[in-house]
Amino acid sequence: MAVYSEKVMEHFMNPRNVGEIPDADGVGTVGNPVCGDMMSFYIKVNNGRLSDVKFKTFGCGAAIAVSSMVSEMAQGMSLEEAKQLNRKMVADELDGLPPNKMHCSNLGTEALRKAIEDYETRQAKSSV
Amino acid sequence: MREVYFDHAATTPLLPKVVEAMLPYLKEHWGNPLSLHRFGDRPREAMEKARAQVADLIGAQPREIYFTASGSEANNMAIKGAALMNQKKGKHIVVSAIEHHSVLNSAKTLEKLGFEVTVVPVDEHGLVNPDDTAAAIREDTTLVSVMHANNEIGTIEPIVEIAQAVKERGERHRPYIHTDAVAAAGILPVDVKELEVDLLSLAGNQFYGPQGAGALFIRKGVRVMPLIDGGIQEGGRRAGTENVAAIVGLGAAAELAKAEREDWARHLIPLRDRLIERLTTEIDHVYLTGHPTLRLPGHVSICVEFIEGESMLLFLNMQGVAVSSGSTCTSRALKASHVLTAIGMPAALAQGSLVFTIGKDNTMEDVDYVMDVLPPIVQRLRQMSPLYKGG
Image (tube, rainbow over all chains, first blue to last red; front, side, top):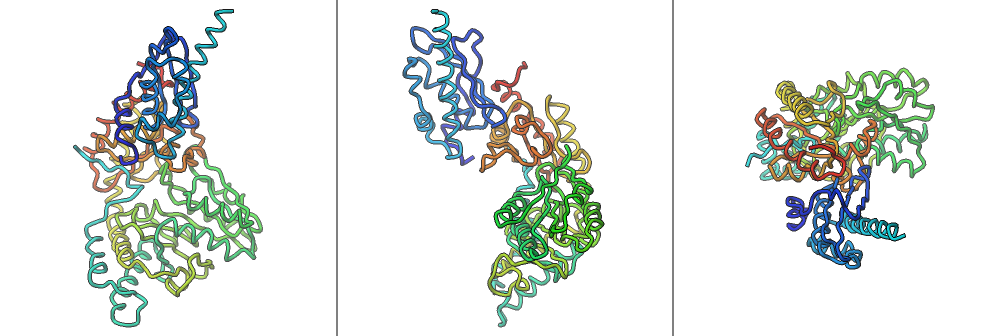
């Protein structure tokens, strides 16, 4: 399939970190099946760093590859670093995405950000 | 690796006799059919023979057949050409909700030019109701367009009844009736006398003919404005030097389809029905779209719940299986299928659309192979999906 890069296809065929974390420290879900893309990210946080990142995705080849790449890039990152991940960084790591699939890379970083925000909200509540 | 082509709705392989018929017009008889000198003779004769072959396929007169470059062009010519030519009589047209984009977008363009368009809804099987169609007709309606069969869900429309209802409705003047028969001609019996339509579109690459060859049937006496102005080709209705080789191929395919169509259907129907049965019984949460029986002989369209079409397509392609999908991600325009929306398919489910269109050379082994490779693909994608709560 000439449309996707080899890297995208690799992540699509062998996605890293697929799954849920039952006792996750933060969960973020973006998109919805109506649009055709939905991603849920689950994180464990240890000493301000992402000790585990897992995801589940409903979507096309690009959506799955992006989720996998985001989860791989984010492993071990500090929360601040992880929040800085943007779609261009993800697309570049994947050796590019077709123009009409760039929105998938946005969705991936957004889902991760939401999971981190969820963690921070829970932290804020528990410290009250 | 076994290769299974189940995407005949996209295009079909050429029959060997079609290729044979075309070659001389690529190699030796490459002249312009309009040329008065000898180099135009053979091309012109071949073109007129093709015209007669296409006419014969649909029960028309050769002079009622106009060659186009595609089915989409024929649809544009019918919709825009008829509406624009007859606008003094009215500026309202009626189309069904599941028409091909070339019909719907032609209608949208007409709207921008000041026309009004009424879209007739369909039922959950994609069937157009003849009475609903007739009810949409007004004093100022000049054209009604309902497709003969739908490429995405396979449903065959009751064109005879629709044309009847339209005729009974029109009093002082009745609108022209157009049918997009691109998915039907050469596959189903299509006879313009029986259908009683004024305009009909078809395309060669749907029935084992070449790409780049379509035709519009325009009943004698029907007025259509040319879309492509210029010289006097195609009776002044469609300018441009004709693609003789493709037209010859179209004619050859038409003649072969007329003779073989019934045999092909007899071969396809058991394959289609077996694939439908296996898909809906061996994989859970799979739904057939379109009418269960009033459907094209080789057409299987389903929605697979909890996962998305393009990802299924990619995995199937890796295993040698070629199919299509109506999911948003598969559409280059990133739009959800208007056909699935029109039949009331929930948007999330519509994303799991898969369309298998079987052809005359496919076998039961191909069906079995697809059923070997698809269930594991579905399982794998479902394990990754946040929507699937299963083992």
